[in-house]
Image (cartoon, rainbow, N blue to C red; front, side, top):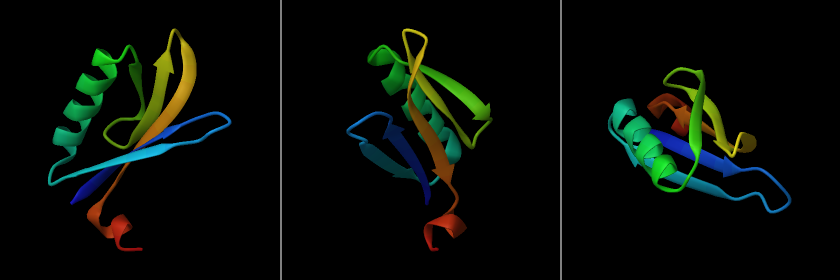
Length: 72
């Protein structure tokens, strides 16, 4: 399983995780959820990691772990 981790930046750092068998499922979920909640998803490394923006300001980061990285 691949794992998407989203971290909020700031004083009270929070994390959310989601798992799926396919990277595209996680990316679709990230884009849809961000769009519904007023965030913009920026891809730094396509299909790997990036940033979350709200009103042009950096508010979070995201990355996808591969199955091998999840066992470390």
